[in-house]
Length: 446
Image (tube, rainbow, N blue to C red; front, side, top):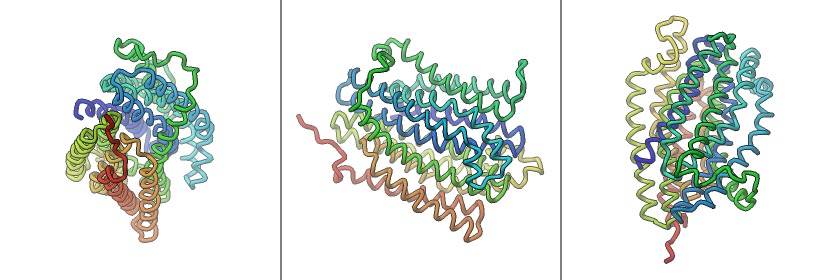
């Protein structure tokens, strides 16, 4: 689990570093620019994360194929191709929606100037939508092949590329005019293209991977496989969408409490997101390991893979909870000057929000790994329902209750988020524990 998990964890951390780099750099342009970028990023990811979830259905399908027959090529290749087909089918309508970001943000009651600035940012950011989905499909392949280090290497290179591109485009260096917030969106689009191109080059050149001929005859359809991938991936996308959109909605609700509240929320959520990448990576590793054991009809292997990932995630998230409570100002200082009196309100709110994030670390890790374990069993529909009920049936009403009705403002929003995460974590793990009785574990037939 560690051999497979640590490159996936670091890859996720590296990927969140792309967005974190943008936020850090845009934060140097001022709190208004930071708030506009936060709104734009949240709208973008509300759509993008759903698409990522759908195409990530390729991972359990490929893993199960390898579990059934170790050196299978045809099934893996066809699953990869149909994953790219779905990436294209999802990107076109998403571009059309994102082009009208300002109108959407105004419908959610955001300040007109922030909405206008966010649209400028999103119109440069949105073109990285498709290449990143392609990268996710490629990453599913190298993970199922149990060679995730290549995805990590390419992602680290993309971070360095993103830092350089932001430095040049945002502030205007090397003869390039300063583009401000739009330059950061363009830098991320170029970095996403770098991710896909870099990993595609690896699978074409590497001796062990090129024999799969992933890009050969890309135009050939496999309609049954496309439908099967859609049936598996759509619930994953919807479940992840429920989680991310409830956090996105929290940003819009924060907008009712002013720019400082949005900026503080942005800082706290970026730190929590960085921590979340570890259980998310372990959940991805669990999907592969459980999926391979599922394909081999190995009930013992399924149990070992799942519980091992869960234990590792719980140890890490408990440690991160202690760090967030102990040194919040050091963490916040990476995003904003904590000694500047002008930032005092942002720092105070961010500290409070970070305490809430520390409290729900265990629940956040449990639901992330639990979902990954169940995906390895290709169990995605019921977890989708659990996610919808937990995040929107419990979490959002609690946020509205505590934030507005009871007068806790931004703190109340975070209390609701923590409650929703806890509910989802409990029901996900309860389903995993009952997997045998529910018929999710295959029976070996000799």
